Image 1 (tube, rainbow, N blue to C red):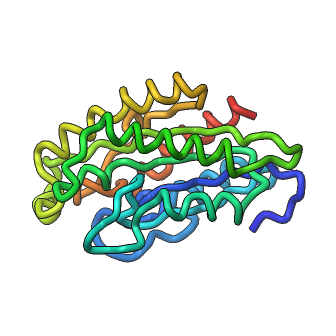
Image 2: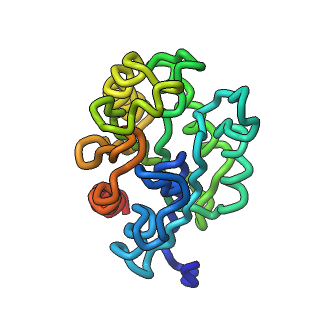
Length: 217
């Protein structure tokens, strides 16, 4: 925890790629290897990075197999818990691409718009304003990775295709709602399971997000 009352406070809200699940197995990467931890190190004590990642988190879908993964339900209490905030970073969407949900990219962007509404209505800054928002389009799924076959019960070729469509629709949403935007797939990719960030991608993603944050401050 950064003990600096003047720190620029950033909430990072996401799924297993914000939680830090390694691509080569279960568990969790150490805090200094996760992109959120590296972001904190990169930006320094003038910033406070709050990590809120959960494996399997969807935008607003109820998972019949895990009843606590609907990200929208937890989002508003999370905003209230961590306010005042200066910036909210949201990186969600790939779990919505699981075959059991059969969701299109446009519908995922529509769900993310609800998050913008929640920030505007629920969160606040130290001066009583509304926090800035950074929408991050997630990495692409990669069926060519050797471990992707183990994910085939959850993702298929359509999932992979749709993951490549997310950037454009999320960018359009960000432009329309005057939020900032970053495309994680420009600098980061999945590791051997084709779903979760490769170890070296955490560093690259932290650099991308740091640059975006500096442009917002």
